[in-house]
Image 1 (cartoon, helix red, strand yellow):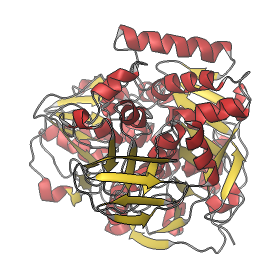
Image 2 (cartoon, each protein chain N blue to C red):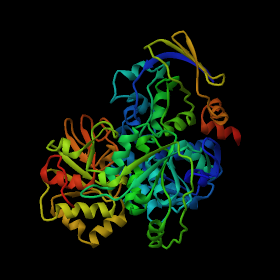
Image 3 (tube, rainbow over the protein chains, first blue to last red):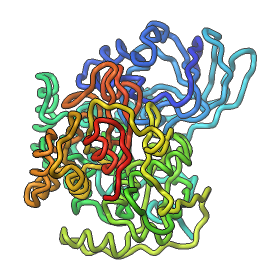
Image 4 (spheres, chains in turn orange, green):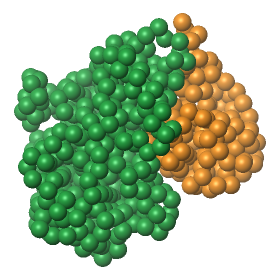
Length: 156
Length: 403
């Protein structure tokens, strides 16, 4: 589970209401969530997410359990999200929909390259390689499958 | 010796376990995606529909044709699959599950972050997202990392106008929005034993606002008495000496009416410090403060008076609404000039039924005041029922008197 992208820096305690607002949840059309991602935080952000690795402060994804938050990021082209610590429901949701999470405390410079290998357990940005907090074997297996739906389909 | 979470999950903090889920529930918001994911998994059926509930509470009745169509599909599926289905007007999922369904010692999973509310019964109750829930529909199980636990000692009794909600805001303030991430909270001590079931539900409800996986009380005679009304006989749980990762103490007698300032639940001040701030709307309800005891308390404050700003009161369930009608509480609230909403979440999630306009301010008894949550450009102050009542009468944030 490796990848690379360009850093988009965000602050701490970004809640899932800010990722995708409640007023956009009632649809099955995933492009709606991608179109309105981070609208209440910064409407210009959505355009910068294709190929991005979001580098956020602590507690990213706190608040509502809405899985649409993780889906919106993936649909908008986000490669992975890094944060020192994630809110736990978002953590499970992101892995379950196949969005890699990097648990590490990184200093962020906008647009700087970020590379990671979650199986090997490292992330590299600004010329420095750091260890990431390891995912459980099952979470890695879910990520490798592309998400929990695909994981269970393979198990069957 | 184990914490309550370790005891119920059957393993030590830090271990990963697979556990049978005794009760699992979704609402109209998360249920749509759950059904999609479940279909994608290609499951032959539901593991045990008698343990699964679908409860419509988030946008009830439906606000648009699209919402209605999504609800229709989920409703048809739930009914034809023999799941426990509660249609619009039944109430908030957590409240419905608290009315004699969830029992001590159970593993309870809801597709909603405030599922931690049900830890009030001595259950291990936590929230997940839609895809995790779909796997539970299919297998009847899910995985957990057994959480470490923070012990919250409650001493003494609440006094004056202070409520469990104020105590909850006090501990959220102490721990911060991520102070308990991946951990559980246990409410212990003689003050915990004095709390009513409704107060325990409030205290557990806000656990997730500290990032906690669960908020829990040990089942005792209060729990047993409450559940006896629903025909359930339950054993009490005896706390063991155990290792907490952190311990904090709240002296209930020192708790004063508090308010959480927008846009963070952990930014808390005494109501006294911001008294006089003009408001446009008061909202009383939600899985935090929409129970009968809340409505009765609110009615005692507004009875015989007129509210000075628009005030929306949403009972947490049909049972709450029925009791409010039977006891005259509802008449007091209506005659004071308040609007009554369909039992459910009301405007809390910002989708319908009382969202605010740009620049407007709401005083709410809910649990979240995130930016734009109840309307773009609006601000939300979180407080107790007594503060909501006093403020509704004045049209500005007002410290409640003796209730």
